[in-house]
Length: 481
Image 1 (cartoon, rainbow, N blue to C red):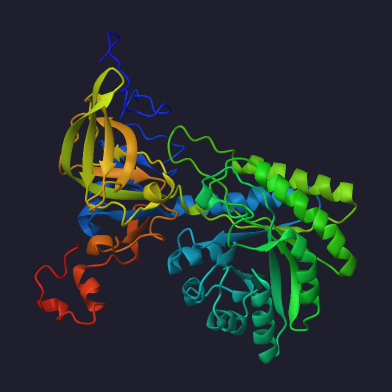
Image 2: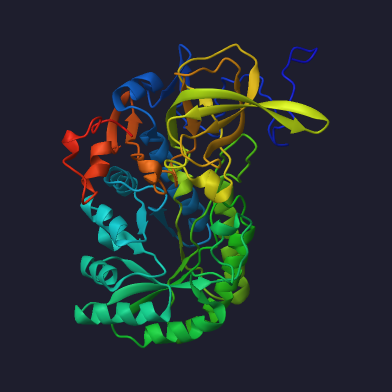
C-alpha cells in the first residue's frame, strides 16, 4: 500500500493495467448488461454463480440470453436506421462461427436476423433449429462437393464463391437440381485491417477471396452460368476491429469496382462482412456500433453519389459483437503460487491462480495474445488487490486464461472465478487437449438457467476411442475430466 492508502502498481503489470479502486467491481463495458452482485455473489441473468456451479459444475460457459438478444436487436435497429436514412436497407447476418447452437440460432431468427454459416456442421445446426434456409449465407474457402450439394439442395439463400473452382462446382450442383443459386463473390480487397495478423482476412498473401484484378472476369463467368444469380460482391477484412477506417477503404474499393461491373448487369447488394470489435478489458475502447453504422452509411452513400451509382442493399455479418459480451466463463480456483520475478532494479511478485479449465476452453490468449479480465464470483473481499495471472490446468506454460489483472489478495482455493466476454470464439475453438472434456454451455434469463450444449464427460471421450472398454466400467467415467 502507498502512503495514501491506495495499492501501488506492480512493475510486472502491463502499462494499460492500473490497480483498481475496487477489485470486486464489475465494469459494465465488459460484463453482460444484467450482471450484478447480490450479497456479494455474482448474478448473471438473475441466477447466482454459486447456483450455476452447483448444478452444472465448472468450468462452465454462461450466456445471458437477454443480453445477446438485446445486442442483436440493437445492431439490426442501428444499421437499419443508418442505411434507411441514405435510401437503402441492410441485411444483418449473425456470424455463427462465433458461437452456434440450436438455441442461439432460434434467438437470431426470432430477432429478425439472417444467419452466416461456414461448414456443413454449422448448416446442419441451422436447419435443425428450423432456420429459414433462404436467409442463410454460406462461407468457406474450401467447401466440399458434399457441402455445396447439401447447401443447394436445402435452398440456402446465398453461397459465397471464394474461387473459380467453387464457381464451377456451385453452378454444376445448381444445374443438376434445376435451380438458380444466388451467389456472392468474395473479394480480397487488399485492405490491411488494424488487428492481429491471424485475424486479418483481406491481406494479399492469404487464403481468402479472389484478388481485385480478377473480379471482373469472375463476375462475367458467374453471369454466363444460367444456374447462377449474382447478388453482389463480398468483403471481409478481419476481426476485432475498433473503427471504420478499414471498412471505409474496403467499401470505396468495392464500389469503384461495382461501377464498372454494373455495365454488365445489376448488382443489388454489397456485403461488407463483420469483425466489429468488443471490449475484453477496461482498457479497450471500441467505437459504439451506432456510430459505426452511421459512419459506414455515410461512406457508402457519399461514394455512390461521387460515382453516380445507386446505393446498394448492404449486408453485414456481426458475430462477436452480439454473443461475445453476453458470455461469461465460471471456473473454480485450485492452487495459488507467488512467483518472484526480476523487474527493473529489483524483484516483484506475480501471483499465479490456477483454475480447473484453461486453453481447452479458451485458446484465444495462446492464439492471438488475447487479454481478458477476471473477478471473484462467489464473494466480495475488502483485501487489497494483488497482481495475478490466471493459469489453466494443461501441460503448457503458455496455458494462460488471464494474463494480468488485479484481484483481492485473499483469493483462495475453492473460490469461483468469472471471466467476462467469453461468448465468442471460446466454445467454438475449444478442444479436448489433455483429454479434458469441453464444458457445458448454459443460457440464463429471468432467474432461470437451461442447457444449450451439454458438457462432455470422461465417458463421452472414451466412447469415441475405438479400442476403449465399455466406459461404464472405467472409474470416474461420468466425472468431468
